[in-house]
Image (cartoon, rainbow, N blue to C red; front, side, top):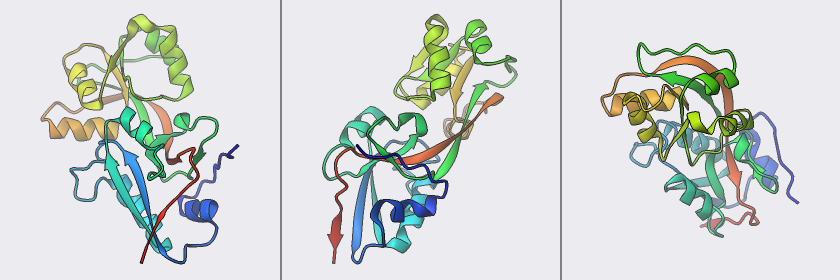
Length: 222
């Protein structure tokens, strides 16, 4: 069984998984989703997080190729032999049997609202018990959020994407959305919507490259 690797230095990802730097240039193909500004096929650098990972791999002569899909499809395709995995993943998405890179960066999770609708709460149970909450159905949130959401299904509304989550929040389909405020602010500006407000931060989540259960194979280029 593959062993999980939790070393808090993103520059170690290559040496942890491959040993020494490869003698020849290699190509790593990963599946991803449009999650701007972290990852996005329409951005010049394919997203700030993609650019950061690409920069980390470059000295090791590893070329990063990213293909973008809806998130659930990205997870399935990441198991194909020509992919090494998917990116980015939260720690909660690194299930038994997978190998994760060290954190490439961190994502904040927060309870966000529309302007002027700030919600006060004492703990997640208080939030989900007394307020309506929106989440993205495709995401595997950290266990401390998943457990509380499962205990209060009547107060939870699921959106199929972050964009729809933002639109539903603005339409007041629920009071609070659980999301990364960096993403929500970016989308608010892109779609000319009011900027969201952070009612309370729920902490930072490491963003990792989750390697597939298949043996890691790479294509060497001349």
